Length: 411
Image (tube, rainbow, N blue to C red):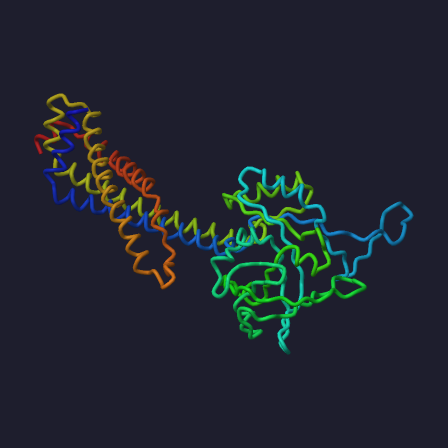
């Protein structure tokens, strides 16, 4: 093997310009591979963060409650009547056991009980419909990054302090310290109206999601329970997990254990999944073409090397060098070129990704081009490029091994 190694190195050194161009071609292919990996993986991560960054990965909520049968059937079948909008409002009145189960489940990062309710917020003659979200102040930023999203004031949910979206604040014409009136909306066929409350705006946030920024009010959990007349109850248990792609499996497990309705962000975003799959397929095709380009370049260059060195190969064969040694010599050339080109390509790809990340960064530090230099799949690119270069060298190597020594010397 030492002999084949020395011959392969001598052949590459003797054709330095060709070896340089061939190595450069491999490096360019690796740069394309790592760029597409960083771009597509970064775009996928950004899309997923946009969808799940301010929402729960999994929600646990009670099944919809069905009214009792209103008439008996001859065959013993129950008949039900549910008027749309008048069904029973379902809440979790005993939420501690399922909350504990969720917190003990492997893969779960956090579980937060929350209560939701429709209401209107008024300031003078301005009146807007909103969704009230009641949370434990200690866990207010667990699901949505409210503390980091504050543009004025601070996230200090108390008995009389609330946080509202920036668009809602502009619509109401309020600022920090102003007081607003919150009137809960009646639920279903409730016979009495809920009591309104006056609260102080303690913080104004923007999450960059229009529906939240213009129609969300966050308040302390017990205050929301009292306001909605649901003392001791919550609407859902919101869960964050470590691996977002395991959401469906963990939701199924929690649903079986808690006997609650468990849904994941994947169930609510089928179009996003389809888009990510299409994006991954496109990225794989481009990366495959970059590897194919490397293979074609290596194979064609080594074919030319075989043609030029036909007489030398014939002399080696006449000295008793076997066909296997000839094959190994040219395969080693392919591996040398692939390995050296891969190393250069990885360095260039990593630097190019960081340069593009820095150049495209906006005022907030987020790049306008969703590339993530850390997700360039550099090791995979280097290994695949080296392997493809070695495999591409097999065909010209076998062609060299079939050269007849006598014919090669005579020609």
